[in-house]
Length: 372
Image (cartoon, rainbow, N blue to C red; front, side, top):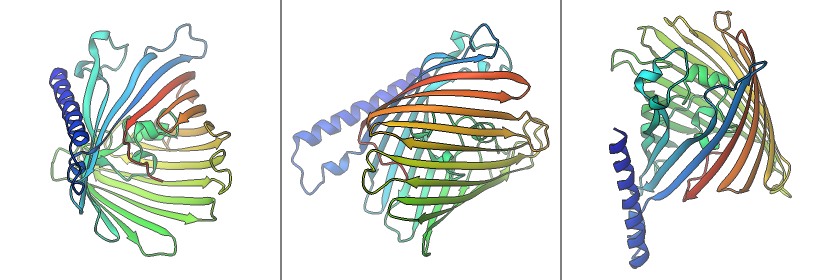
């Protein structure tokens, strides 16, 4: 299976190179040649990780050097009305037999890589006040769930996102409508109907049991240098146990970047709260938690950050975990960077777990701008 995916990946890359060479050698007539070439970018994340419980003699088995993820993204306007985006993710994966293990390390034979369509969708660009989207995409559940791995505020996702939405977040196939509501401030309401394939939340036995996601975004411009973003979101759908799963969440983001000197200093203070229920499941049937973080840009290419978070069951049936993180990042440009992160996780009936992570971030090609 991996061999066929490799052939597919190489074919796409060879085709893009051939089209680029043709465009460079042929005259541009009214942009006709350029329109054949999508924007192509590759994002590479490398990772070094070491984790160790307090008092333990050896580090955990999931550490060392690894290729965390590689993303191949192609995006282009299909015509004046529709834009298409394709994002393929190459990441480490375990064999089906290894993924069913509950204890013990994974053997080298059971490790491998997988290529998956992380996002593949069409999006309207010419309809006033509303944007329709169809395909596979990151759902609008909260703020962090919309991000790709290379644009995470920290190297890893918050604890509550991992435990409630799954390790890769909530990505679904379906339809989306984002409406810009006339208001004195920026107000956007998003409604999505998706298949509900997520094994962490839905995965109903009936294909007609669709899940729904909604999100309301409020962006206030406090001054020329300060903005405040407030959001509310939720999700609902049938799950594998023929019962209903629900999620509610709230998020905020405060940004300050001075008009003069904003190239050298800025502040971001953000947080997100999620609570959810997967009725019928014995473990983690109810979860709630939060994550809040502060980012301070102390120089043109340097950032320091701190994060505190918590995740657990409100009735005590699931272990509650607390986590504190500190991060230092150096980005010579918008296309490359290095981040050093330290984590400590306490709770859950275990000794404190200390983790050190070093991540390399590299982007080549015409990468689309991230959301504000």
